[in-house]
Image (tube, rainbow, N blue to C red):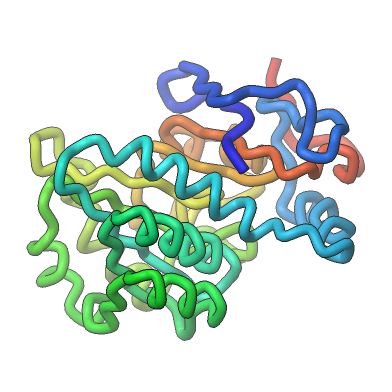
Length: 259
């Protein structure tokens, strides 16, 4: 699966990679200008999942393709911040694909558990699992060179209120100074579906300001309303919309509709 469309980032520029006028199942692809709620997107996924469509694997393949594109520097490595839910699963299956292509990947767990099948696939493909990084995040961040690409798969559309908690908060807080730097030590971030910690529907940011502004956000199925609303719209970077065939199954009207 390849990215099928693009959306405006903070700069107002539009990124369109492999844009297509149709969806993965032949219907109309969701518009990059329509922002849907998490509930609407989950409902649209349900009939596809019930029919056995491997949405997670399709999303992971698209994510891996974007990561390959962004790994422009020789000696680049990927650090995957993997949460407990399906967002982490997307990242882990993408890590497996990247490792099979010879890309070094380190997995940093930030939740109470990891997606079992995704973790097995990633580790068998050669990914390193670092369970100590979240306990000593400042020490870990100090080891990261500028060719490192951070993949933020901590929290997806299943999050409740904006903000990060526990290990996810601690790791993001340690990384944040390196992500917002303007010199050659700056670390780039690819967000999986949404930047972890934003309000998925309302675009809110955490009160304490701890989240990782993305260079690129790879969002799956349809645009999330929060990605089109401030302040999250300015934190998502360039948004790449991956068509998974949800278009015919989206019900109601979008929460946000841009001109």
